[in-house]
Length: 281
Image 1 (cartoon, one colour):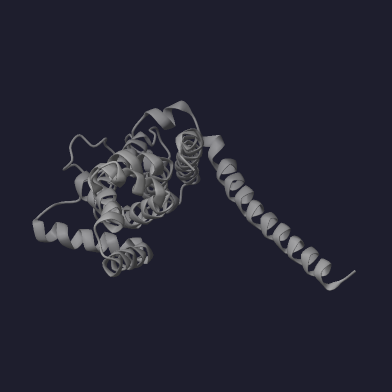
Image 2 (cartoon, rainbow, N blue to C red):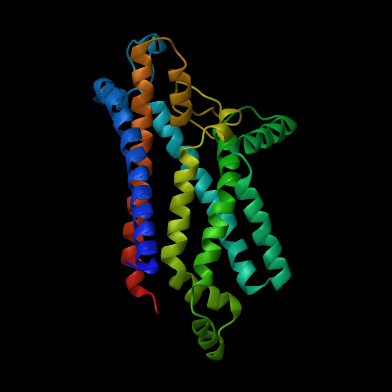
């Protein structure tokens, strides 16, 4: 057996082992969460808010955390998208090369900033403005956290649009704004939606950025200025109790969070496949 075949077999074996390690970790994580969550999972757990004595193992559920997480991640993703799309279009249609590279560098740096730093920054701004922990504060902080994910994902998607389509649009008399809105966004739509949904998945699973800004409450948020619970914080607070029944409820919150993220990933993949049929290659 020659050297090339030995190298090929070695790297194939290495890739297979890597796959087994990753899949094994995934199965162990999901299996552990399900093993602890299923005994405590029931309809009341998903449809009721915590009641008196909940953190001692009595009645109630995690509806407050489910609704709060959806509000926080949904609002943060919407705000990040409204801010991120113009930035991505500016990089490709208006900015000079050095300014575009500067924006990309800034987004890469922001992407690497720990989420607790975003939480501390949001908390400082809220104190300066005289705000209390609220749904609005959590949404704004999550929007800042998700912004670099949205911008860089959209940037890469727009970059994949063939340059010939832009040139054809310009040749027909379209302006840069018309080309961006009617040609580029339409062609890059699968990638844009994927970036948005991935940012949503990151936002709904983050705890540090909303710990100081959104607070935590056993009630459902009734306004933007009310505190809001979240699933990651529900896991954190309930695992810290000495009561096994409450700890099992933390795993229920973890399972619900995992299912939500899984659904978001599946939706992103399906939308990408369906919308890809209308893309000009």
